[in-house]
Length: 358
Image (cartoon, rainbow, N blue to C red; front, side):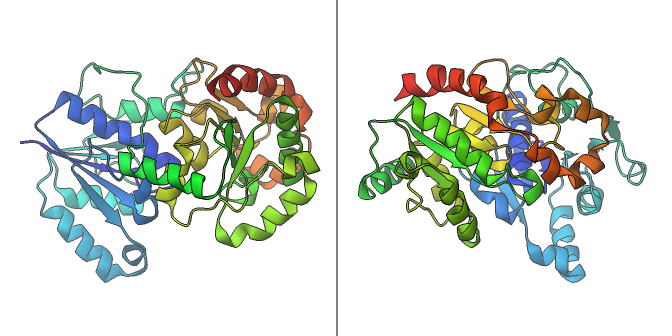
């Protein structure tokens, strides 16, 4: 029996995207065993995945203690893997790949780690991609193992239990959320300020939606971001404010995912939340940060269900600015990314993807 190790230590969106590697491996090697190394903070998006036989959690202690990391590497060495697929390609995953002792070690071409791997690939820059570079670059890593994918358009999925869906339904009922009207999950903040659409602009975006449909808005945020919630609400019109249920809050990521599953759409910052919504099959309207590549992360964009906007859609000249400079100038660039730029696209999205599903 072949045993595969997939390594993806990073954020929720990255971990979700790489689950497709596990699924492809199971499709083409049904009798194999697939193990998946992820950061413990991202466990919720992999739990219950039928294509992952073993989830190996990379914990904070492994990063902070050399002894703990060495013990982790020794546990990897004992597994006798046939192949490792290192999607992360940083020092930690380089060492995990090295200690795996696998016959095949697959990753991306980096000068500092090329001696570790048997197969190396350069990133794709296909400008006509509908899958997105984030997906296409992952599929490259399967080519030493699979000549032709049986399901090349496979999308990442989150697998919720029936009991989790029922708990989420009961949670909404207990909080008197009107499910007869559309429920929209709002990605209030990105993972960092340079990935967060200005709160006053996002408020105007919800004000616009309020005029188009009688939606209830749920806010996705962390407990320590309560001040940002208060600021956001101060920018909303009374009509919009009355439709926002900031009190409907779940403490764990897995329970939040269950809540996502009861919504009709996601609108907000591109990132982990937008990827969660896609993995649950929700219509998705994402607002990209000016420094993030839309070509990479606007995945599965072949239909109206997944929509995304980027400042470069309206001011393409910003792409002539190097990525690092755009990141530093994100706050100023965001100020030029006014909600009115994408109102027509948002209106079509509401009319075609949200209202018909209520």
